[in-house]
Image (cartoon, rainbow, N blue to C red; front, side, top):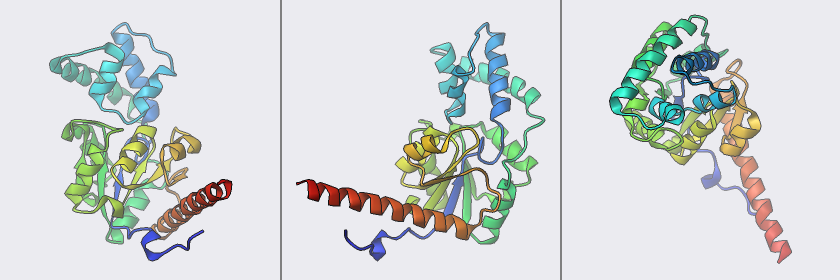
Length: 249
């Protein structure tokens, strides 16, 4: 087994990119209810398991097409507005993920640049961040409208890093969905999974470096420690696998 060198160490952390739904705010129950009621208004009955699709960080156009088939641009816009009406009726009880607001403020105080990369609409993202009094802490916000290909494609994370003027290798994403983890890792970011609705096993299998239940007690030093331990674990696993291959020969 070869020793760990300086090139194998975790890159310096210069920026953090947050997904919004399920990471900054606990909005998934409200989204599930709004989508069910919206689809029922169109005569579409869906099972709870079918609605899992909406929680995977996809763009609204992709979700609408999934449930309703091919749609024109005008239909996507109109149906989107209709769904938003149902969401507003369900969104009054939405709360931030525990510790998320405090962690964002802590990161800002440490001088680390931050962005939001979400499939949500620009208006809802702006309203949410303003309501939580967090908007001023983010150097940039990238929404589903800003990219052609949504998650799990890496476009939204590549765009966020470009606007932040940072190397993806020096950036960490916080994601709660499998498609979001895949998007972040495909863009070259390290990624922490937030267990707001998905299991640790699923997010880790998708590529998350490690997972957290919420942000309570999390600090930059603990974040960097977790990333370093994850890197060391994967290096040891890779080296052990190489050693086993040599032994088998």
